[in-house]
Image: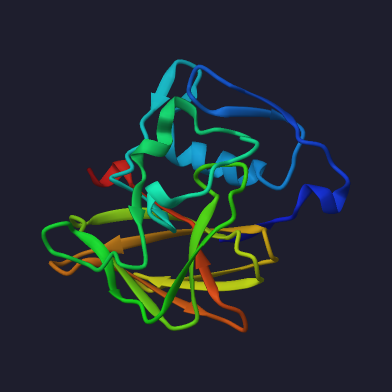
Length: 219
């Protein structure tokens, strides 16, 4: 499942009004180029309530791809800052983050990677990793069924990102400075890590964020 968000300035829109509810999720009055991305992230990070029933979100891993945290540009105008300091739940992945068994995640193969830091208005979306060579990102997970949410794009150039994992393939194309969403549900079995194979299309691939959620039915 894929979707792309268009820049607000292309539609002549103003930033919508938003507030953070008691569940930690943001509620929007209006829409801009980031609202769908932020909603998807909130859905992966915060519990959902239906009447008085609370549905728990289990995200064993949250990854942020880009430049090292200490080297990122300051953000001049913050929009939709992550609620409840949820940005601290994201593990930083850089071009040097090779897979190590002791850590349990990292690139098994990546070719040449380029980190970009646009200094944009959200600390989770401001940087990304891009490449033209195929890459493989491994995560050591127990057997189970998982939903993967990837935010792709945000680079200075147009990007085309295809991700294959567990027999499922999804693609997202994004204009310069725009983002796309990929959602995949996969089953993982066996001793080998879960592998995400990342390839480019006619443009480089680009990944910002990866959330991995475990299906509660398989706990």
